[in-house]
Image 1 (cartoon, rainbow, N blue to C red):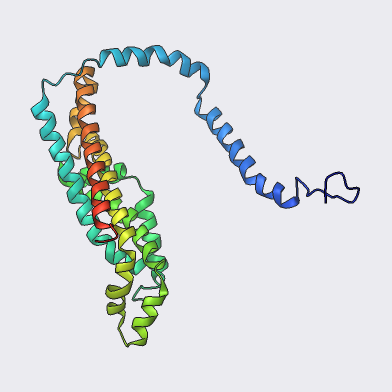
Image 2: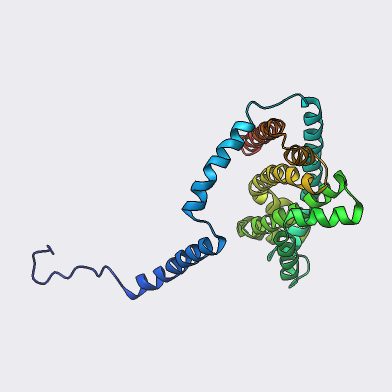
Length: 270
């Protein structure tokens, strides 16, 4: 029917379902506005802060690389903390992911317990874990490594469990019909199918750990964070900018390496 037809009834633009769908968006918008007001963030305060930000940037240029060897040494410690913590965390995340899996857990009905434990590890920020480990073990790289391990457990374990649950049931049922046991099904069908997601998660976990390990040094967990904290406290902003540039370079290198690893391991002809 054409719009000029007297019997033409256009579809309603607003329905009860449309209104129901808009309620969460409106509630979210109200929460954002209220949160901005509670935080004290206003355009006036931002505008008044621009001159101070401009002055800080001028004080950070040009970067001072006079302590470049010390910066590289501290960056090496930070990188080692990230790699060691991520490696241990991923190694522990795989069995925890299996236990937290709804379909593959060897103890029926307990996957919710492991899910809850992983959620708890994920809820507490790695900075808090670092403070706890520094208080227990003293300042040093070991506190940073343990904080990264716990953070990686909560992050990777959750995604490993999800990847295992999302696997196609067909190959598993085929192996079951051939008399394969639980471990054979896990190794022969589940883990190969979940491998691409696990690789993505593992590489991203390393990238997250490298960024986190920079911050962990500020609370005494070793690495470049200590150098950056000292430079800022002494108002040596040019040295701080050199440290920030070095951190940025390492993060970019890790991201490029991660992308290369993903391409190689997930190539179709691999």
